[in-house]
Image 1 (cartoon, rainbow, N blue to C red):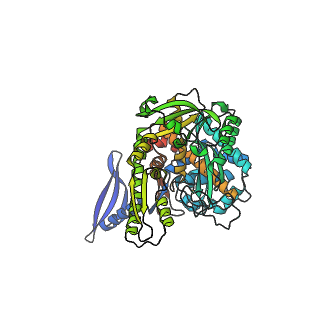
Image 2 (cartoon, rainbow, N blue to C red):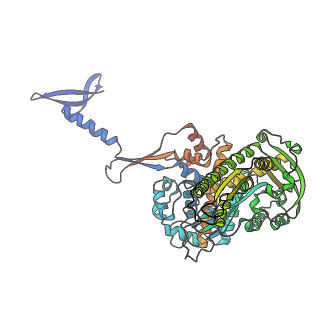
Length: 563
């Protein structure tokens, strides 16, 4: 038994730690340790507290990076790439597959340029569980790895990884959505090494920048891209449709899948007689659409012919079906009317009319002041430009009186009868075309609505924070194509993760899922050195129930720090 024992020496109290025990049945002091004065004891306690306190801490990203890496491991991304490409570039500390997998991980969690990946990696816990050092991730090594992959190898890699996704995750690939978009680049006009980057119709409204086009074929089951195609930004989408279909059919035949079971869904931007002939020649089924204004005979059909579409998700929707020669084929045609779409289009028309009305009022006021110097042709051209919207031109009437600029007077009005006729005849209507004779009207409509999955995939690629195509700091056709591959693979993995979470009851968007995973951080406690390197202890931050469940879904335990 130990106890503190005071001794007085020259009037001062000093403390000792005595240990007592029984020896031969009698109490006896077996050790005595000098502790010093009360001040010495207090100082010793303070020193002890200091010894158990960390000198500093570090907070590292863990959950999102580990979950993405876990998915890459499950799909054997590194192994597939290394087997097809031969593995390494001479002098590189990591394999080609490793560099591309790291690039994919960065695209999903914190998109940045290759020059900044090493800095990002150092702020994550990934170096601990991957054994890849930040110093190994010099941006020049990424370029070497990208240059080492040939176009043929890239196609083989995409096909192999996609096949693994379909098999491992049991994806339903019978119904697919096809869509195309383009992305702005910052490639200089004088750069002749990237002919794939061209000026065209920019869907991001950046008409001053060169564009790269991208087409995707996406599953309805989870919105997973299966096929991608990069093309020059000045090419209309409709011209790239055959290449997308050929790539799709080749990939399915390589997988041993009967293309006759596949239905491709696409919007009116892909329509042409040649494209429909190409589809039927490839043996693929389809669901598409055509602009209602191209079919006045269908718009004139009485509303009494439409019938409610069964199903809770089609509340208020009515439809009729008939047959018609469209794009050179005898098509099954379905005309639908949605009250929700009707109201939305009506609100849009009101806003467009209001904007045109304000501009006409401003022009009328200018003319009324007699200060205009424009001749009649110029004024009428300005009015026509203001009324250039197709619907506005149909229902807005105007009159320009006067013979000279000083006498010009403008009056305008909305033709109520024309407006009512427009809204009743066109608003809320869609016209779908399909060769699926065995599908019900509800199945055709449901299939067409899957087009939104492809549109959502493109919106995700244009998100600057997660799974982003930009920034794209590459300036040759080859590196742009490899960069596109890593972006599409990132989109595939992100949506597979979302699908996995959804099947376990967590209905989250990609952004919400990654945010929840990013909340699982790793804290490093660094203690003062007692000789040699400072000691470090690692632990995860406090987590919620949802984060714990996500950690289990993505098998994060194998990456969790143990010391």
